[in-house]
Length: 82
Image 1 (tube, rainbow, N blue to C red):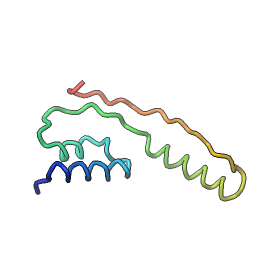
Image 2: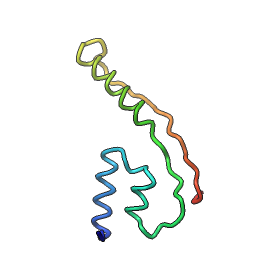
Image 3: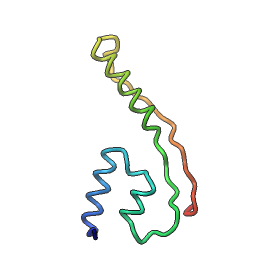
Image 4: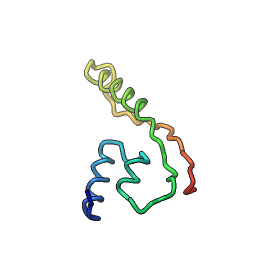
């Protein structure tokens, strides 16, 4: 299946919304001319999901009603493109 540039752009945007844009296999599929292994940033998705669930539970039960700001440490995955 051949994607147009517009199709690739829409596909990458959809992957970003799902938090999946940082995977190398998806990036290679979206940019087939790239032959090197891409350096990426790995997001701590499981930690982010767990914290989101915890904050939502606190909000539902009224134990935490103020807005919260949480910072997570991403991991730089250095590969050949660095």
